[in-house]
Amino acid sequence: MHGKTALVTGSTAGIGRETARGLARLGAHVLLVGRDPERARTAAAELEAAGPGRVTALTADLSTLDGLRRLAGQVAERHDRLDALVNNAGGMNARRHLTGDGVEATFAVNVLAPYALTCLLLPMLRAADGARVVNLTGGMPGGPIDPDNLQAEKTFLGWTFAHYNHAKTALMAMSHRFAGRLRDDGVTVNVAYPGHAYTPGNRATPMRAFPYAYRPVAPLIRLVGPLLLSDLAKASRSSVHLASSPEVEGVTGAYFDAKARRTSWPSGALDERGQEAVWSLCERLTGLTPS
Image (cartoon, rainbow, N blue to C red; front, top):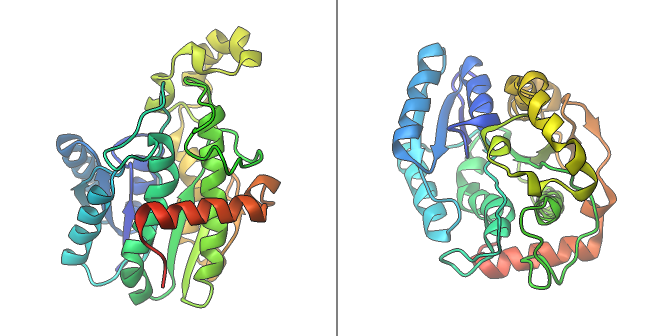
């Protein structure tokens, strides 16, 4: 990755930070993106000190189009191309609420932000030689997509993983469609599954977030999680592999598991009706389309 530039969203902590660390160790100039300026600067300084790559801190609110446009503008002012875009940022919420753009927050961060940022940075990605877009899924994705409930218009189950899983499946559907759209552009789009890791976000998740079937063992998960799932480098290996490895040069429209192995897409992500609903909603809410 020497001489290459990679942008990683949500990279002040957790899997995003380890992805940024892995790419910096390979010599990349990493653009580390976080919401809090101080946390972003601290994380960037720590990763750059470990070298050998450069790490630059950027700040952005990825939940709004204005924030995404500002981020894309900052990148375009400083760089003429982008070799890798890792859309790692995500999240789940206790209750349904809308962003400043009037978009349901879980959908906005997990699906709309990767779509919009890829569109906004597409000229810079096309300017690179074999640029790569890596979108991170999570939770337990793969169930059917409900086109009428993409923004939890019908049901929102609060602190459960149901809506988060639905959003991550929608992200996968969007990514698969995006890969097809860019197939002749020299830009690849793939999805990485990081596996289960004990991230700062997981530590903040209350017991009631666990599915009912798992709640009896939730205290045990809380106990062993820090012991068995604390190695975030393992959780980042799929995203680092897809952003950097010569082995996947030219590979697009693929899904990789937590061990960086290519695997089958879940049926929910490949459903044509679901893909079309997600893609159309992203176009309508952002006013952006890859062209």
